[in-house]
Image (cartoon, rainbow, N blue to C red; front, side, top):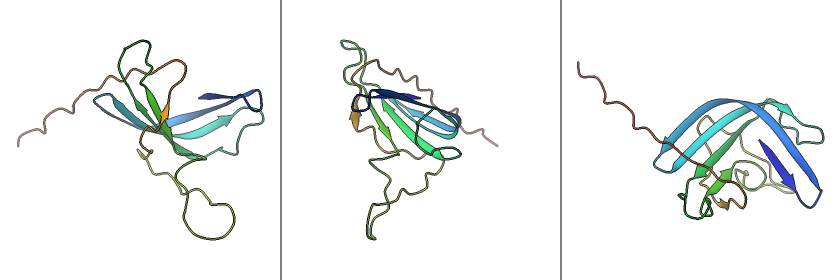
Length: 119
C-alpha cells in the first residue's frame, strides 16, 4: 500500500502478506500482516492491519468508491488516560468503508461460495 501525506509531502509505503480476503456484492475486506515498511513509515512490522473497500460503480470514474482501514482513526481501545491504544486486529476484521476515494478507484469482483456438498 502507499499513502501520500500532503501535510508532510511524503508518500508512505508498506507491504504485507494477505491472510484473509472476503468479498460480497460491491464490497471486500482483507487483512494482511505487514512484512516491509518504507523509510520514515509507522512501526507496523509484523502487525496485522485491516482494509475494506466499497465499489460504488463505474459512474464517472469511481467517485462513489470508499475505503476503511483499521489504523489511526478506528479500532481504538476505550478508557484509560492519555492517548488511546490500538486493539489487535483479527483475521478478516476491518471497519466499514468510511472514507471517500478521491483519486483512482476499486473494482470488486464477488463470487458466491459454492453450495455445501450433499452427503
